[in-house]
Length: 378
Image 1 (tube, helix red, strand yellow):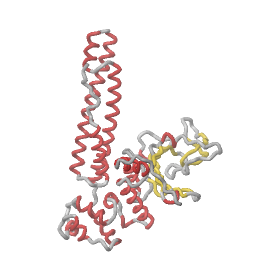
Image 2: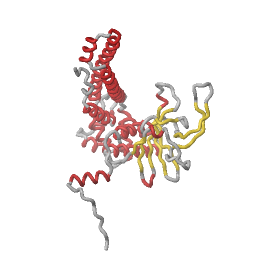
Image 3: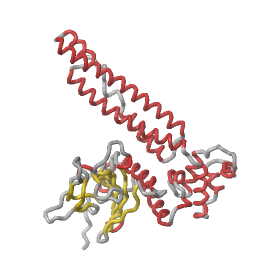
Image 4: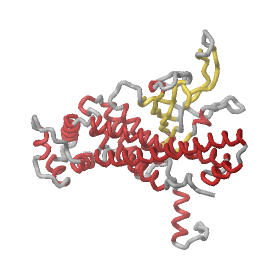
């Protein structure tokens, strides 16, 4: 039988490559030309998938017509070319899933291209000047030298009428020496932040850096579980951000309905909140826990972007929880929360190994599989 529609043609390496590229580009470490190249590559993938899906749709129609005509020779030809009717449906479903994945990549690359178009040189240089003021031990000449650029480079680019953009090497070096994430350097007006906002920026930047270097032990909480939280036998709700609330909720009827249930009472949507996707938490000192919550309005219109948000909360044992920032807040640091969440979510798609497991693997790699013996003091 023909393998005309081999749904395994797309190598997993291609997807991994694109995922890695998007993660790198999200940190501002790629040129616009590279993003455009990957955009065209993904477009070609989707075009190919569309063609193959169209072929399967045509084959399905031929099967339906053949069933009416009871033409066994036509059935044989279709089976030779595409497979049986059941096989065609299975291939169609798999290709549809494949196309959805690539469409997601395309959407992310579109956003990255748009960000390239919106690069604000004045903002970037203003931030560098502000950080140089805050960190007097770092000099602009030091940044230029380490980036392999002639001294006075930034001053020349700052001159009125100079439309040239700074090189990626310069921006990466500036971010490294000034100890700030690239997306913070190029997208947030650091001169207009309050002291608290500056504090949160530093916190988020370190979280992002440490996450990318696999230094943090993030935990995943699925939307399926969070949307179905129930109290235990004693009525205790195990999650510190959830509580039983009574409120009115919109229905298909004319009047809202009073409901009582366990919900995450978010800052953005109040009790009218449901969990939209995987959420993540990180245990810090003394049991204090950071929560990154991917949420949506529980009753919402289709294609309403304002019905979705990300919120960052801190829970301190015995002292309750506090919101740090929400993605819909009117603050310059809101985009940094979305960037942090994106990095954590992407990294959590990769294998994670905790210290105990790593210790066992490291021991095995040294040909040590014997149990440790505890020294007994005498």
